Image (cartoon, rainbow, N blue to C red; front, side, top):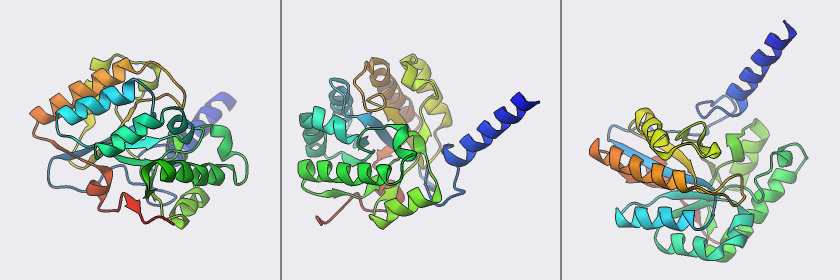
Length: 237
């Protein structure tokens, strides 16, 4: 009985604090009401080479712009990758400094991570990101309020596949991503792994297959700011 109660409590906590569709604590959009077949492709936990550049190469070959939520330490590790995708017209958002869950458990730690990542990205981009995604899509009232106080729009999304981070087969990920896409969906892929280096070959494959499959179904691709009608960047401050 105790075990069952614990399982129920964990599932409830996940539904409230991490489920992409949860809006209990405030607006954290995972899709946008859209009559047209449009979808936003987003990429978390990078940059991570060579996979970030391989995804960027493919998107460029199809005339698609994506939205990359980048980890500050990864930007410092692969600055040229960030420069390259920014120059290609992709949008870059804040995805914390270290991507460590422990920062949610220490007062002020996640706020400091967000602020430092804004500095790192501002130095590279020459402008200040206005979009943010919290690691693991964690949300709570104070956290979302802190982001908006910094004029950052929190952006959730739908995971292309729940097991992607475990290097799931790219074809299986693509099938799942295509099946759950609806007009206005924000799809989440991972070009990195929790802010660390790692093999994302299957994710690159999944992105290619997903784009081909959605294109065949009449979808076109936009960036998150275009989809939600919010700014991607704000003036330097």
